[in-house]
Image (tube, rainbow, N blue to C red; front, top):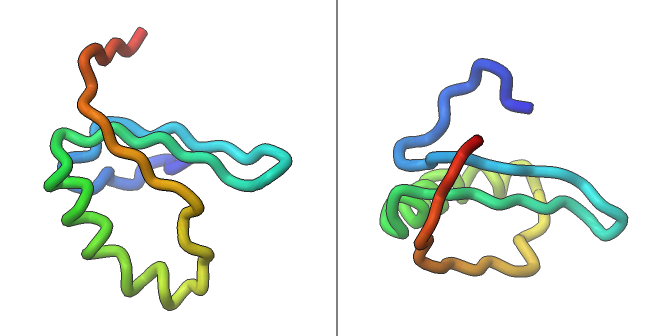
Length: 68
């Protein structure tokens, strides 16, 4: 868990976990532009960390977002 880390501009929530085949992450962004800006901004740090590229990235418009 992130603890007291500040979320990047535009990220509303993130769910992350690990299963038998790797890490899984779901992020909800205010807009696709916010998500894209963060991806571009964080690309150099990810390259330096030598992390593998995501196997799949899917974007879609959210029609309902409820936090209980």
